Length: 324
Image 1 (tube, helix red, strand yellow):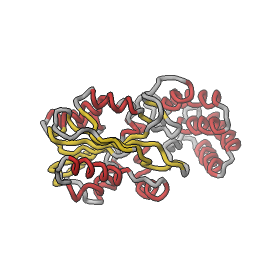
Image 2 (cartoon, helix red, strand yellow; image 1 turned 135 degrees about the vertical axis):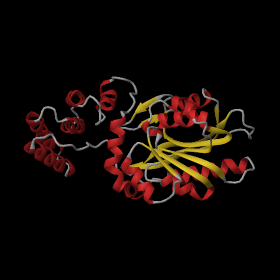
Image 3 (cartoon, one colour; image 1 turned 60 degrees about the vertical axis):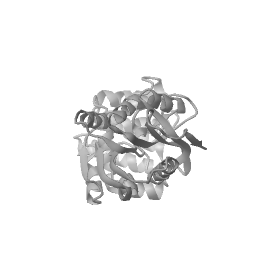
Image 4 (cartoon, rainbow, N blue to C red; image 1 turned 45 degrees about the vertical axis):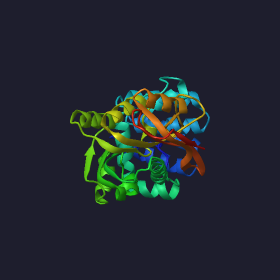
């Protein structure tokens, strides 16, 4: 599964919809030139068909026509002010627009609602996803180093999705709370009966409400969700407000050689090590475990990632460990 494919919605014109469907079938067979031609016909018929403009941009980029791709994404964004298709991200990546614009709520929700039914199989069978297992291992190492049992009174699973991380930690948590934007993903999580509470909300809004209600958690997890967050600082600030004094937060990010944040062709963010460090230290957190890993594969190649465990800076713990 890649996260950059077009998300379908009807144009309201049956002929345009059919041409759009044919174009995607042509692209699936690798005939990108024919797909681009069919999509150009589609948007001629339905100029406000945002999904078709987005797909046309993707086809043109595959054909090496970056200028044409940018033009298509600009039209797609104009037809889709809420950015449910992620055109702003593509424009930032290709045209040097906003350096790292935030993903729109409508884009993230729609993306994961459409993948909910096949998400687990796509990640584990096609993309060799092992984020929850890596987090479990990192948390276990951290707790052993601190001389503490692998047991938490309360845990919060941010961007819990279908519950893959919840399944990895359920046996060592007394109370498990999950939050996600996608109702489709949450329906899959609920069916697994792993969580004591599930909430539909964006991460920052949920964390702020929890802090206002004085909720505290001994473990805060973020498995493969921060790749959809451009700036980690607000999230780390919010996590620090709900984390118990002796609590820890554990998360994965995709990374790159630079120090800041970049948008990848997959429409996910890669966070540099400097950005991660500053986001933690700026909000009273310090890493106690940080390791390079391949959380998933993309087109058969491992994706550069980091697994991080952090705790409040005031907590008494052994010096930070780093493995490579």
